[in-house]
Image (cartoon, rainbow, N blue to C red; front, side, top):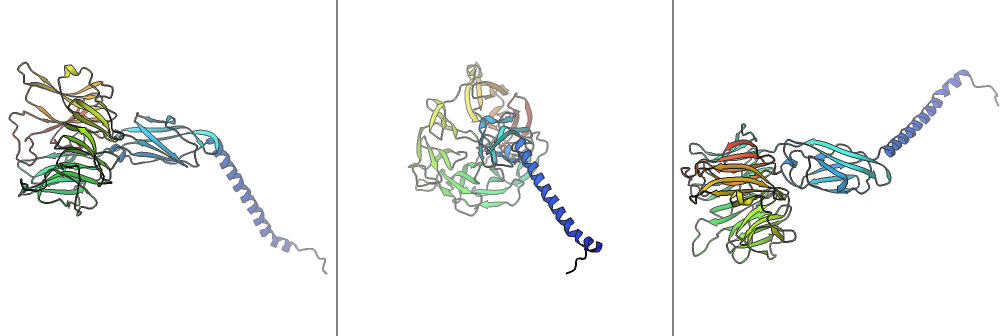
Length: 473
């Protein structure tokens, strides 16, 4: 056996293996150290969130939109008391695992910076608390208006609040009505024979597609659902007679199936419908029939009997994002909560006696309404009209005053967030001739846009049927 020592060359040949081992040990130690430091930082800082998810355009266009925080660890329970929104906006929350969703009850104001803050957030395993915060600026949803024109085709224009960037997106010889959803326009036209046609397009007027109708007839009360992609209307045959035919029957259809036959809604023994509306966030419809009865119909179960809600004179509308319907009964105006069928009188406007004779009421948001009042002159004829915003506590903000008998308010509509009001006015009512459409309108119509916070006018747009309006004049 040789007892010769290893040579210097042999020792040098072993060094790379030894060096690699030492390097590996150092790397592993570093990784352990980094992991330990990361864990220590996590334990000392509390839960953290990456970029919160929110659709800035949709949140200004429709109720029920959300901002979602996703954190780096599962969370302990989070309550609504830990959440704040600036500027103030009603909300609900849902938290599960690593996610917290803050859902806004109503659409947010357009082109406005909001901050959502969640305090005292802790991990499911304990540890220090942290604050989650996200700031975003809401978008400005497109605004549409209809202009009927004597010397050219009727047109639906896309415009802005200032009314200075009007672009035609749909034209036709005779546009009766239209509605805008978040993704589409639904346009009602009339052909030479007097029969209605329904066309759906993109918001820019692209890809026009005709929707199937029950037959050759006229339609009224066109509406689109806030969600779900449904359209509805009442339909009457052109050849209706005493011997038969469809008259004022409510139909609904899916925009995703334009060729499918629309579905008739059974509302009871008398199928004729005067007014109706989609109930937000549900599959239900509220319907006022020719016999003066108000009914609630569930479209998810068309075989079920409609729920009778009692007699009514008129259906003023439903507050966006809620199931609160404003209904005119013989004994006065009431608000019905369609989730439990409870009802209460509509809050009176402060100083209502001095405002004049109450007229139409339009739901806005958070219990506020737009209301029209008429003051009579000594000669017994209307002397002035005013439009006001009435808050849930009865506080009044004047929005528009029309002095003298010449001009008249035709309709009021609230923007999705309630920040703005559109007051549709016909100037010089006596000499302003009506057209000969199926849905006749005065030749000249103006839409006044008003900030409901202070009553300041924003602009006046020529035209009608601004896309905030959920029903026709």
